Figure 1 (cartoon, helix red, strand yellow):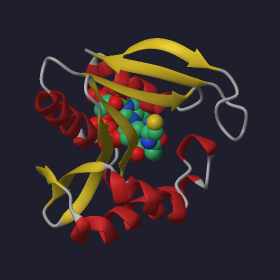
Figure 2 (cartoon, helix red, strand yellow):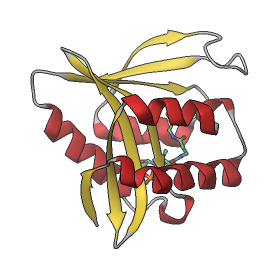
Figure 3 (cartoon, protein in one colour):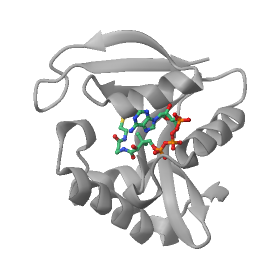
Length: 145
Ligand SMILES: CC(C)(COP(=O)(O)OP(=O)(O)OC[C@H]1O[C@@H](n2cnc3c(N)ncnc32)[C@H](O)[C@@H]1OP(=O)(O)O)[C@@H](O)C(=O)NCCC(=O)NCCS
Protein backbone atom coordinates (compact mmCIF):
# COMPACT_ATOMS: atom_id res chain seq x y z
CA UNK A 1 0.00 0.00 0.00
CA UNK A 2 1.39 3.42 -0.89
CA UNK A 3 -0.09 6.91 -0.92
CA UNK A 4 0.69 9.91 -3.11
CA UNK A 5 -0.77 13.03 -4.73
CA UNK A 6 -2.56 12.40 -8.03
CA UNK A 7 -1.98 14.39 -11.22
CA UNK A 8 -3.24 14.62 -14.82
CA UNK A 9 -1.63 11.33 -15.76
CA UNK A 10 -3.71 9.62 -13.04
CA UNK A 11 -7.06 10.85 -14.41
CA UNK A 12 -7.76 7.70 -16.50
CA UNK A 13 -7.31 5.54 -13.39
CA UNK A 14 -9.60 7.85 -11.36
CA UNK A 15 -12.25 7.75 -14.09
CA UNK A 16 -12.00 3.95 -14.30
CA UNK A 17 -12.41 3.62 -10.53
CA UNK A 18 -15.53 5.82 -10.51
CA UNK A 19 -16.94 3.82 -13.42
CA UNK A 20 -16.32 0.60 -11.46
CA UNK A 21 -18.26 2.05 -8.50
CA UNK A 22 -21.15 2.98 -10.78
CA UNK A 23 -21.12 -0.45 -12.41
CA UNK A 24 -21.24 -2.09 -8.99
CA UNK A 25 -23.97 0.03 -7.34
CA UNK A 26 -25.66 1.93 -10.18
CA UNK A 27 -25.80 5.70 -10.59
CA UNK A 28 -27.18 6.42 -7.10
CA UNK A 29 -27.84 9.94 -5.82
CA UNK A 30 -25.44 9.21 -2.94
CA UNK A 31 -22.54 8.79 -5.38
CA UNK A 32 -23.42 10.57 -8.60
CA UNK A 33 -20.36 11.25 -10.73
CA UNK A 34 -21.19 10.98 -14.45
CA UNK A 35 -18.22 11.77 -16.73
CA UNK A 36 -19.00 15.49 -17.22
CA UNK A 37 -19.35 16.22 -13.48
CA UNK A 38 -16.30 14.14 -12.67
CA UNK A 39 -14.25 15.87 -15.39
CA UNK A 40 -15.11 19.31 -14.00
CA UNK A 41 -14.16 18.23 -10.48
CA UNK A 42 -10.91 16.61 -11.60
CA UNK A 43 -9.98 19.84 -13.40
CA UNK A 44 -10.07 21.94 -10.23
CA UNK A 45 -9.78 19.77 -7.10
CA UNK A 46 -6.71 18.44 -5.32
CA UNK A 47 -6.39 14.65 -5.41
CA UNK A 48 -4.66 12.02 -3.34
CA UNK A 49 -4.72 8.28 -3.91
CA UNK A 50 -3.83 4.99 -2.31
CA UNK A 51 -2.27 2.25 -4.45
CA UNK A 52 -1.76 -1.46 -4.18
CA UNK A 53 1.17 -2.03 -6.49
CA UNK A 54 0.25 -0.17 -9.68
CA UNK A 55 -3.50 -0.37 -9.03
CA UNK A 56 -5.39 2.68 -7.71
CA UNK A 57 -7.34 1.27 -4.74
CA UNK A 58 -9.00 4.52 -3.68
CA UNK A 59 -8.84 8.30 -3.91
CA UNK A 60 -10.09 11.51 -2.33
CA UNK A 61 -10.76 14.86 -4.05
CA UNK A 62 -10.75 18.03 -1.97
CA UNK A 63 -10.53 21.82 -2.17
CA UNK A 64 -8.24 23.88 -0.03
CA UNK A 65 -10.09 26.72 1.71
CA UNK A 66 -8.45 29.09 4.20
CA UNK A 67 -9.71 27.31 7.34
CA UNK A 68 -10.64 23.92 5.99
CA UNK A 69 -10.24 21.34 3.30
CA UNK A 70 -13.60 20.52 1.71
CA UNK A 71 -13.82 16.94 0.50
CA UNK A 72 -15.95 16.44 -2.62
CA UNK A 73 -15.34 12.81 -3.61
CA UNK A 74 -14.36 9.69 -1.68
CA UNK A 75 -14.20 6.31 -3.39
CA UNK A 76 -12.43 3.00 -3.11
CA UNK A 77 -12.50 0.40 -5.88
CA UNK A 78 -15.05 -2.40 -5.24
CA UNK A 79 -12.18 -4.90 -5.54
CA UNK A 80 -10.35 -3.26 -2.62
CA UNK A 81 -13.21 -2.62 -0.23
CA UNK A 82 -13.12 -3.20 3.51
CA UNK A 83 -9.37 -3.72 3.57
CA UNK A 84 -8.49 -0.46 5.28
CA UNK A 85 -7.41 1.47 2.17
CA UNK A 86 -9.71 4.43 2.73
CA UNK A 87 -8.98 4.59 6.43
CA UNK A 88 -5.25 4.75 5.67
CA UNK A 89 -5.79 7.40 3.00
CA UNK A 90 -7.88 9.54 5.34
CA UNK A 91 -5.25 9.21 8.05
CA UNK A 92 -2.75 10.62 5.57
CA UNK A 93 -5.04 13.52 4.59
CA UNK A 94 -5.81 14.31 8.25
CA UNK A 95 -2.09 14.55 9.00
CA UNK A 96 -1.45 16.62 5.83
CA UNK A 97 -4.11 19.25 6.55
CA UNK A 98 -2.45 20.26 9.82
CA UNK A 99 -4.05 21.10 13.17
CA UNK A 100 -5.14 24.60 12.18
CA UNK A 101 -7.62 23.40 9.54
CA UNK A 102 -10.81 21.33 9.64
CA UNK A 103 -12.01 18.74 7.15
CA UNK A 104 -15.57 19.07 5.85
CA UNK A 105 -17.64 16.62 3.88
CA UNK A 106 -21.22 15.61 3.30
CA UNK A 107 -22.83 12.22 2.97
CA UNK A 108 -26.24 10.90 1.96
CA UNK A 109 -28.30 9.75 4.95
CA UNK A 110 -28.62 6.28 3.38
CA UNK A 111 -24.89 5.83 2.80
CA UNK A 112 -24.27 3.94 6.02
CA UNK A 113 -20.88 2.45 5.08
CA UNK A 114 -19.44 5.93 4.44
CA UNK A 115 -20.98 7.23 7.70
CA UNK A 116 -19.35 4.35 9.61
CA UNK A 117 -16.02 5.21 8.04
CA UNK A 118 -16.25 8.91 8.91
CA UNK A 119 -17.38 8.24 12.46
CA UNK A 120 -14.57 5.74 12.99
CA UNK A 121 -12.14 8.45 11.88
CA UNK A 122 -13.58 10.91 14.41
CA UNK A 123 -15.76 13.08 12.15
CA UNK A 124 -18.69 14.70 13.98
CA UNK A 125 -22.09 15.44 12.49
CA UNK A 126 -22.74 19.20 12.54
CA UNK A 127 -25.85 19.69 10.43
CA UNK A 128 -28.42 18.06 8.15
CA UNK A 129 -29.68 19.44 4.86
CA UNK A 130 -33.07 17.97 3.92
CA UNK A 131 -33.83 17.29 0.23
CA UNK A 132 -30.23 17.97 -0.75
CA UNK A 133 -29.75 15.15 -3.24
CA UNK A 134 -31.51 14.43 -6.53
CA UNK A 135 -33.57 11.67 -4.91
CA UNK A 136 -34.67 14.13 -2.17
CA UNK A 137 -32.32 12.46 0.31
CA UNK A 138 -30.95 14.38 3.27
CA UNK A 139 -27.25 15.34 3.42
CA UNK A 140 -25.38 14.91 6.69
CA UNK A 141 -22.52 17.38 7.10
CA UNK A 142 -19.52 16.11 9.01
CA UNK A 143 -16.43 17.93 10.23
CA UNK A 144 -13.18 16.81 11.75
CA UNK A 145 -11.07 19.26 13.77
C1 LIG B 1 -17.35 4.16 1.81
C2 LIG B 1 -16.07 3.64 1.15
C3 LIG B 1 -15.24 4.80 0.66
C4 LIG B 1 -15.27 2.84 2.21
O1 LIG B 1 -14.01 2.49 1.65
P1 LIG B 1 -13.18 1.23 2.16
O2 LIG B 1 -11.83 1.28 1.50
O3 LIG B 1 -13.97 -0.02 1.96
O4 LIG B 1 -13.06 1.54 3.71
P2 LIG B 1 -12.07 0.86 4.75
O5 LIG B 1 -11.79 -0.57 4.39
O6 LIG B 1 -10.89 1.75 4.96
O7 LIG B 1 -13.01 0.86 6.06
C5 LIG B 1 -12.67 1.58 7.24
C6 LIG B 1 -13.87 1.54 8.17
O8 LIG B 1 -15.01 2.15 7.55
C7 LIG B 1 -16.22 1.45 7.96
N1 LIG B 1 -16.80 0.77 6.81
C8 LIG B 1 -16.33 0.75 5.54
N2 LIG B 1 -17.18 0.04 4.74
C9 LIG B 1 -18.19 -0.38 5.54
C10 LIG B 1 -19.36 -1.17 5.29
N3 LIG B 1 -19.66 -1.64 4.07
N4 LIG B 1 -20.18 -1.42 6.34
C11 LIG B 1 -19.92 -0.95 7.57
N5 LIG B 1 -18.80 -0.20 7.87
C12 LIG B 1 -17.96 0.07 6.85
C13 LIG B 1 -15.76 0.44 9.01
O9 LIG B 1 -15.77 1.09 10.27
C14 LIG B 1 -14.33 0.16 8.57
O10 LIG B 1 -13.51 -0.33 9.60
P3 LIG B 1 -13.52 -1.92 9.93
O11 LIG B 1 -13.36 -2.65 8.61
O12 LIG B 1 -12.34 -2.09 10.84
O13 LIG B 1 -14.85 -2.21 10.56
C15 LIG B 1 -16.40 2.65 -0.01
O14 LIG B 1 -17.37 1.72 0.41
C16 LIG B 1 -16.88 3.33 -1.28
O15 LIG B 1 -16.08 3.76 -2.11
N6 LIG B 1 -18.24 3.41 -1.48
C17 LIG B 1 -18.82 3.93 -2.72
C18 LIG B 1 -18.59 5.40 -2.89
C19 LIG B 1 -19.09 6.18 -1.72
O16 LIG B 1 -20.18 5.95 -1.19
N7 LIG B 1 -18.31 7.20 -1.32
C20 LIG B 1 -18.63 8.07 -0.19
C21 LIG B 1 -19.54 9.15 -0.63
S1 LIG B 1 -19.83 10.28 0.72
